[in-house]
Image: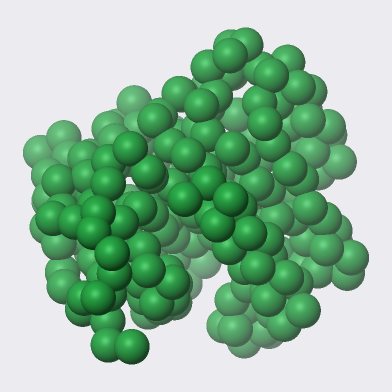
Length: 242
C-alpha cells in the first residue's frame, strides 16, 4: 500500500510547529485520526515511521512536533533540555498538544469524532495528559511513558479509553508512580488497562534504544516481543473503538 506523507505546519502560541502527516489514499473516508507523540528526541525518523505504520492500518496519523520548527535532539542532554522546557510550562505544552489535535481534525478525510493519541516515553506522558484534561479522544495509548500527572483528573472527566504499555524492568518509572497512576485512574473512574511486559526496559519499542543505551550509558533496550505485543494491544483497542 502506498502511503501519502507531507510536512504539516501549524501554529501554537506563536510558534510554527512542523508535523508529519501520513495517510493511505484508499482509506475509507472519513477515517479515524491518530496523533503520534514523540520521545524526548523530538519528531525524528522513528516517530515518522510510526505514523506511517498507522496509515497502513487505515488511519490518518499526525506525528506531532512538540518543540517547534521541527526541532530534534541527538544527545540526551539536549533532549532533556527540550523536554523540560515543555514540562516546566505545561500551559504552553497543553496549548501545543491542543493545536496538534486541531491540526489533525482539520485534515480532509479525518473523522473528528474518532480520534486517538499514542505516545512513546515523553510522548506517552503527553498522550495521558490529553486524556486527563478531558480531550475528546476515543483512546490514549502510552508506550513506556512517564505516568506522573500534570493535571489530576476529576471523576468522570476522562473520556478516552486508556492503555498503558509498560516495561516491567523500566528503571525510570518508580513503583510509587505506578501505584499513584492506578489510584488516579480508579478515582477518576477511567476505563483503563495497564499491561506490564516482563523484563522490558525503557524504550522497548524503539530499535534505536540498544545503541542509545550503549552510547549514553542509559538503561534502554529494544524488546522485539514487547514491541510487537504492545502494538497489537493498541490495534485491538482501536479495532474495538473504531
